[in-house]
Length: 241
Image (cartoon, rainbow, N blue to C red; front, side, top):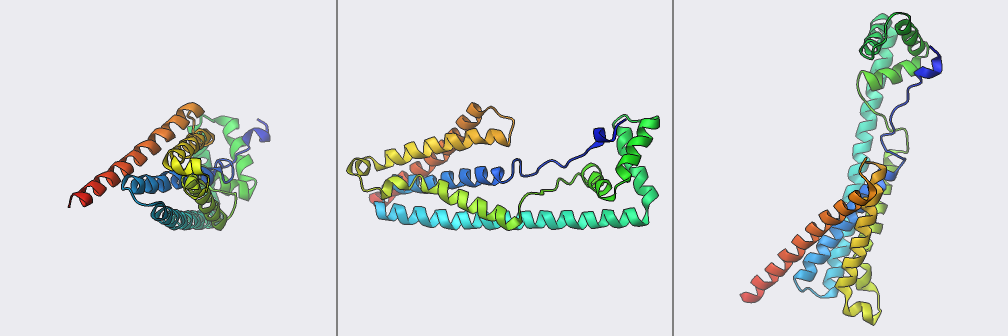
């Protein structure tokens, strides 16, 4: 058995660098911001109020999501580093036990005899590769080697804000035609963005791009429709009294 056949790599937890951060940040940005816009429009609020609510929500939620991603990524990395240091200590102090654990993993995969001995020898010949193997196949920890937690948080925040701007753009454009159909343009921009973001999810899921895009569009439409309906109901109740 050749050594190159036993090359183990950790799965990239970020699935293509920062793509996961971009997709989920943009998804939440477009849905939550348009939900606020739809609710305000359903309540018959003036454009200035819609813009204030929309921008306030976009920036506050974007910051919260970015900070949440930063803290989550930082905690995961700290935990992984701690477990790595424990594995390093165990290999130094209890090498025979750790070798036996590697053998057990290969036995579960069907290795036996000389193949088992050769595979175990290849993994345990290099300490870093040995620790990498134990982290993934004993502890089931998938480490993210790409970017710092701060960068993940920043990417999430920027994606959230840029996507969240789309439902608000028609409200700030001075064109008379857009002004007279402003909510319709906001719906169109949001729908297109939702479908595009959903289609991009195929990069981090196994779903076909068309199905993924339509799913995202449906979810966003339900959230926006509910927000618009609630706003309309509240306006009617207020006007009634």
